Amino acid sequence: MRILITNDDGIHAEGLTALEKIAAVLTDDVWVVAPEYEQSGASRALTLADPLRVRRLGERRFAVDGTPTDCVMLAVQDLVQGAKPDLVLSGVNRGQNLAEDVSMSGTVAGAIQGMVLGVPAIALSQALLVFHDDERAPFEVAMIHGPGVIQSLLKAGWPNDAVMNVNFPCRLPEQVTQVEVTRQGFRGFNGTHAERRTDLRGRDYYWMGFRNGEVKLGEGTDLAAIAAGKISITPLHIDLTHQAALGALKGRIGGAIPKVHA
Image (cartoon, rainbow, N blue to C red; front, top):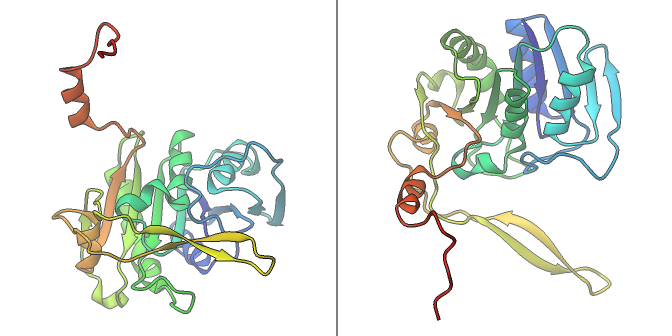
């Protein structure tokens, strides 16, 4: 089996090293194509206005000065020599990718790009209790349990238009004993905000940040599984259609173009 691995935390990230160890348990044919610099929050961004540069760091190891989507596209179309990868693994992200996180996640985007190019793909993330530079993610959880989870997924299979989003809880490895297949949750509050500051020349600039709030776990969700110390596996796809709204609107709008009434 040929595995391509990528991430959004960058080529030097501790989580990428963890993912290489996970992949090495499954095969000796592992290719690494990851961003030169951190691309967290890049989502499915594709570099269109600048050329992409690639640094070859080893026989099967490359750094790309672009996004996770760029990395997977270049890898599948050019950098991986010979046969196409059989599997794309993206991660292991430093921090969970749950609920609405998945729409911004470069980790999930790397997996989605693999799916778009016809390669089965799995995104993997290691949960943190607190997002802070001094907080170390317990990647041992992913390294110990990841190979078995991946093998089980490959044996079970999944549709060609879906990716698997795997999150590992922030617990000691021996405390993690359960896996749950979940649906994507929704926290129910807007945690992102921009803080305005002033530089030494008196000009405004902004730092993006996150605020905590009351989380609606929701039974059967990825949020609830991680809170309970379980490994969460969520099948995702890029069809963002809201089916309930679609049905409701079809009964009220359609046919002739509506006119504005005074």
